[in-house]
Structure formats: structure tokens, C-alpha cells
Length: 470
Image (tube, rainbow, N blue to C red; front, top):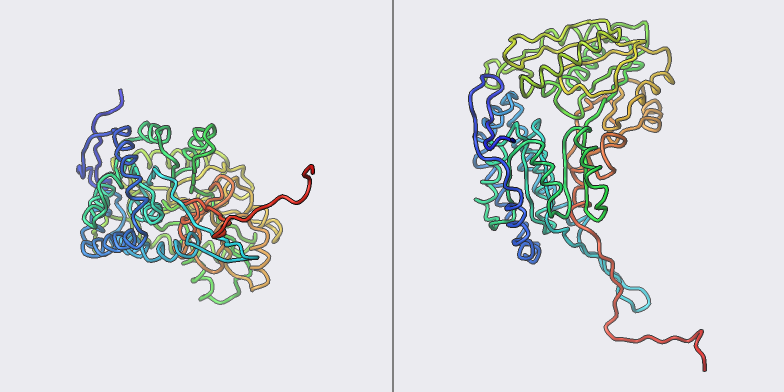
């Protein structure tokens, strides 16, 4: 029997953060379906006003919000403050995207009016992840509401408290009852929601779950499915130059790429690819990784990274680490679990040069080193993955980056910046096992509404002049 109550705990202490009932999908979908006509008919200006009221509510309780995210995820509070700021900033970005990508357009040719307008899908399900439990589902919710959709939102079972908190802020902002409905539970509740009477599903999470959703949606091609999934992201370092400052800056870029959020970002760099025979960057990365503070979200001084989300996640990472070693990997920095009963993991580095490593995404603080002979081998190694979310180049010149951009396979391609730096004012998504060509962020407006093209004249005037019998 599935559990009737969900309990969320602080990963750092085991303290209970939240508890509540699970399920209720059918009732939530029915409430949404009943509210859908009224919300779709609400003028866009009124929908915008409610979204701006939500932004104001977020800003009013920003510190409380950030502390809750820190308590439920274990992320340092400096990082969760940036997440809350992103939640608020998403509103104006989405309003601009709605106007640009899903607004009304009109023209005329030969006396015929040409119009492009958009309609909401209706009831959309949103499945949220635990790594950014407010920002990432909010990236679906705001544009979906602006487009006139109603929502059934299932937060990650790891972060239900954050989901409930955000829903209360929407209610406080004046969102009508039934427009945003929250259900809680694990994978079984997610499957029930995907199979329910919804007109589409917006998902951020693992490739494994995304593939299962795609199979579940295979018989209903009329329903929209937007998948934003993970990556086995490469970071190529090439032609760095001889200055110590260049090497130190490159090392900082690598460490940020690999270890931000304890490696629990879908855009974290998993593989550092560099020319064989030059160990300066690897040595600098190891030295900087040794200095990273791992600790609780409210520690003073603040840690660079907290724990991974749960003991189960830490257990899985330890198994993945053992598999890398079994495949022949040479440990440069071990994956150390400071306490066996808590999911604090150290930043780990392993040299996988010449090894047949798995293409699985290790969603945690593990960086693989791969040494290659030449540039062509570097590009081949970067693209040796079924994923295609993020890729980065450190070093080189504009011509080399242009070559990297042209031959890399990813939806986010950065130069001399961390792989996990992405703008909400740009599309966000990947190819291959990283997504289904429906990037979120600024392009979320595209999948939250469908276009309706119209030809029209004020008067009826039509005749057939060819192909008629006398």
C-alpha cells in the first residue's frame, strides 16, 4: 500500500520539516477543470496584475522563503536567497516573453486581415524537482498562468514544504481558487497525475523519469509534454596560456561548474576534458577543491556547498563512485561521507582517461578527468554522451570557440563561463536525453499556449470561376 502521509525532513539533521496527506489527484484535476473557463476568460491585464502581486508577496517574505528552502534542501542560505530572487524576477521576464512569443500579431494583404493569436491548453500538470524546488517549477507556473492555463502542481516528494509555501503566496496574491492546485506524493502520484484528465504536463527532473513520461504520453499526442532533464555535461579546457592567473581563473570556473549546489544542478560539469601532458589545471582544481567548505545551510562561515538531498541520494552516489573505480578510474580526490547517517559528501575527482565509463548522470559532487591527444579527440569526448544539455570551453580564442560551438551537441554552450550559468531571459533546455526540444525559461511561453492563425474579411465575398459546368 502506498503511504497515506508524506514526511519531509531536514537532510542535515533529520528533523521533520513538513508532513501532510498524499494523493487527491482526481479531486485536484476536477477543481482545475472547473476553474479553467473562468481563468482563460480573465483578461491578460488582470492575469499580469496577479502575477505581479505574487512577485511582491515573494519579495515581502524573501528571507523566510530562503530559510525554508535551505532547511528542506540543505543548500547554503546564500544560495537559496538567490533562488528566491530568481522566483521574483521570473514574473517580469515571463510577461516580456508572453508579449513577444505568444502575443497578438495582425497584418493585412490584398484586403484580407491576417491575425495570430494564442489560446491556453487548459489544465496543465507541473512536476517539480528538489534541487531548485521554487525556481524551476515557478518557471513553468508563471508562464502557464499568464497564458490562461490552470495548474495541478506536484512538488518533489523531497520538498513538499516549499511547494506549499509557494502555493500560499499565489493565493495571497489573489489567484482564484482552483487555478493552482497542489498534490503531494512520490512517483505513483506523479504517474497518476500524468494519466489524469490533463491537457499537458511540464516536467523538470531526471532522464529516467522523463523517458517514462514520454512512454506514458505516447498514446496521447494531442497533449503537450515539455521535458527538461539532466546531462553528462562536458567542460573542455584548451590553450589556457602560461599565466598563473589564467590557470587559477580556469580552476575556479571548473570548480563552480562541478560543485555548485553539491553537484545537484542539471547543468553541472561532470567531465573535464583537457590535453594530455599538462597537469597545471588539474593540480589547481584539486587544490581549490580541497579548500571548499561543506556544511549546513546556516553555518558561519557559510559553506560553498551543503549535503545532497537525502541519505538515499548519497547511497546512490557512493555506488556510482564505486563503479567508476571498478571501470579503472584513478582516484585523485575520494568521495568522502563525513557522517554515515547524513548525506554530506566531499568534492570528488577521478581520472577516467582510457576507461569505459558509464554515461549515467551522477547527480552530485563528482568530477571525471579525461585527457586527450588533440582537439578532434576533445570534441569527440565532449560529444560521447546520449545527453545534450550544457557544454563549455575554457581558454582558446574566438575562432576556437566558434569551432566548439559548431561541433558541440548541447542546448547551452558557454565560453570561459561555468556550465551552470544560464540566463532566465534566454531559452533553457537540451537535446538527446536532456529534453524533447521544448526549452523552458524564456521559451516556456511557446509550450504554454498554442497558436491560432486567422484570415478574415469584414464582408462575405467568394466565387468559383474555374471548373464549373455551364
